Image 1 (cartoon, rainbow, N blue to C red):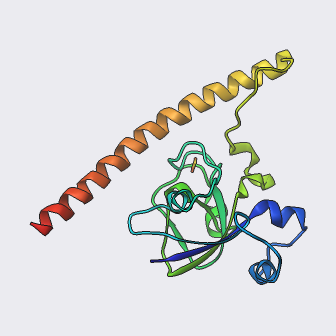
Image 2 (cartoon, protein in one colour):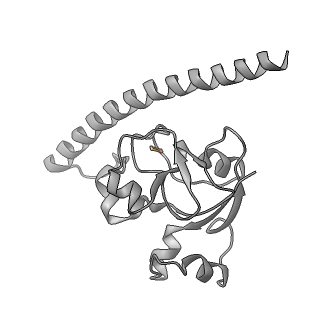
Length: 182
Ligand code: FES
């Protein structure tokens, strides 16, 4: 099964490490522990986020359908193939190697990723945020909440449609696998 080695973006930011070729060597030589650094196995027909959760990790996500950047990761070595996505630009995918772990599967035997990359500045405008209502809400804040609610409703509706399509295609796969075993 493919192995995904992961590093938490919070560590990269807190230690002021740069995103360069030596990043994972630095991580390897440091005193980092799970959940900040380690590796997971990703099974067949399993997305990277699902594999991380199955291994007991609590990685960020929201829509689970390629429609936000909450689950974003940066690929450093190897490749992650995205099933679909509608939120990242071509430049972010091809030049910055951003991938959405909820819809990604390994395309190489080993992959190195920085997960929790939703904190990167250039992704902030597409992170789904949740508000706490136990605070003073100014008119500007209320407007912002309304905008976010509208955006979330549209995103979640889209995510629901995509999830239904994905479920259908998975069931078709399982069904055709079962038929071929008979
Ligand atoms: S949680 Fe993966 S794209 Fe929204």
